[in-house]
Image 1 (cartoon, rainbow, N blue to C red):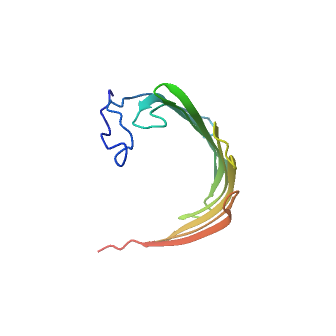
Image 2 (image 1 turned 60 degrees about the vertical axis):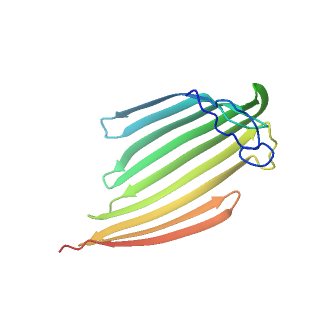
Image 3 (image 1 turned 90 degrees about the vertical axis):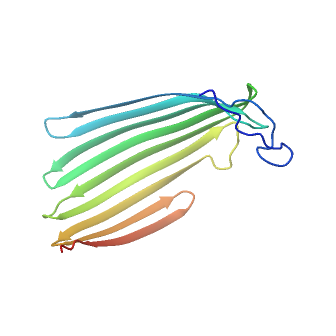
Length: 199
């Protein structure tokens, strides 16, 4: 897009606090790909990727344009070690990078990255019953021209869930425990009961 004049406010006391009577344009190029395969054992693998990059302009007195790139990669493997047991392994990474300018003069750079891994096990002990057990891990990293006191943090989680259907009633009991590098350990629990009535 060629853009519009996004702000015509008073630079000394309102609006955008700057006076840039120009059109703030934007361009973006993006591509995504998804592929998968099912093996003879009924195991499935799937890979996905997304990348977007571009340039945007805006009104500002410190920075007023930026080059950006966003990327996400993921892979998933589903397999069944035994008949009542189904497992799903997921790994992924997302990135967000930006380089900022003031009237084409370089000012700063920011980089963020998130890595994730999770393993979920779904077990069907009997009809209308599903037990789920899993673990996951997440790591966040930030960098660039700014020096942060803390540039990374991680979170480790374990979770369990039990679902059962009896007649017209569904019961779901769930619990999760997280060990976060910033927020310490936290536990959450919830119970959901649903009933289906026929008139």
